[in-house]
Image (cartoon, rainbow, N blue to C red):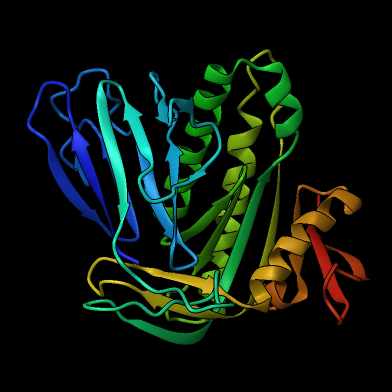
Length: 303
């Protein structure tokens, strides 16, 4: 589904921007929505991202002055409804969905839309990574909302940069969790190697951070390799693919299992079989994952 933003600045003429899969908002000209005339806007202020082919999320990127939807500060990603009123500094932004028709029962999978829109489905094997912030709910009760929004937004920005630097794609944010995938077209070994490198770098990045107030900041990461369906929805030149399928469910279930195992990184057998033999692993055996008929063999990084 296509969408557009109607920008109403306080000190400049109004304008519109049509957005595709991802649209960044900030003060510099490399943003899809450039608010260069507004000094209280951060260089990288916020991003709007489409997932599931039809849902648009607004994510603050650790901005100093905050991002607001209906005058409520954005802390974790917020799903935008048609007509949502966004405020960034002294700029009002109205989110508008273009006309489209969702297929009943296919929400989160694919969508058929009219006019210049098109839908195509393609299945490919990818490496998948889920990174979840531990203790977010607890800290949200202790940390002032402004400090929490800036802290977690900066984390989203930095993790996104790590994924993009290693040629990965962020599919979606769900609360404080991120789903990313690698599809280089060169097969499992290169995809899984890049995903594992990002996992290690995410752990190192988390270890350097503390929650406001000084408590340790921790994350849990799961890695899986499997076949997913790419749903290319929207203007062909302006939209990436969103992914669906059992492999997506599996990687999220793996992340949940990491709590029981007590390791910050867990890997499925389907992922580890694409890694070099010199990667040190610890075998935790096969386990049942919620919603899965077949047991999954799970590994952790040794040491």
